[in-house]
Image (cartoon, rainbow, N blue to C red; front, side, top):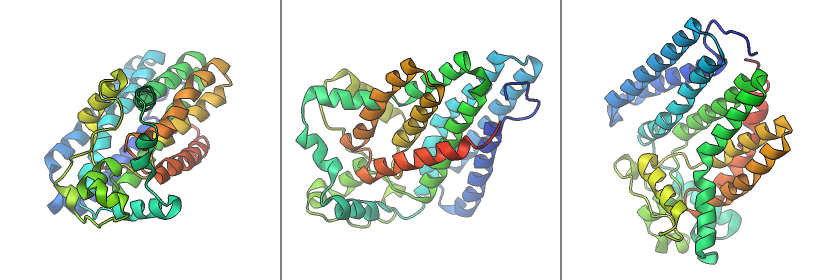
Length: 306
């Protein structure tokens, strides 16, 4: 698994497959796309960066150049995420369905009430800390595999990145924005009364979001705000990839049987599961679905060899 790979890695082929799939979707929805030129530019940049990293590895095959190849794929995740919005915003919004399911299951909207029940500043900071730990947790586990279990480093990358692309496909086909966008568009008064109107193509031209609840002067609250301003879009609510991918990260940590790594990751995982609902990012059913799908994706992708 850790030997020299002359061709593309499995995870790179998965990324290329995702690129081709989205190109087909672009062709089918071309007249309604808002930024098709930028979307094509992203794909050209991705192909160029992937082939360049592969070429460097072929010239000098070693652990460092292998790390470069994986790092390129991870960096582009932050580009692929907002791209899902460019594709799914041409489809009818489904938040009214998911908010309705939330109401039917819980008899209320947990995301709307959570911060009201637990309004304390220190709790808000814990929630924000949990949410912004998303990418650091991924990096920590990837680096652990790189330095301590290099023979499974490519498998780690495959499971993690493969899960991301699986979520991105779901996000494109299920245009659900989550409470921070839907509640603002509808109005929290109506939401509290159990009124969930169908917004149709509202998010084709609107991307305003609610401010997160909690202690607005907190350090981690500000970090959360910065990350949201940098890349948040009305997309990717169901299932929660934050919960799903951190579930994958925890399972990868458990695979190592490193007590220190597991105990480092677990507290942030618990915070993440609650934080997604607390900060209005997701409905509670999104978080539950993220946990279930994360476990499923881990199982499926660990069945593949690199």
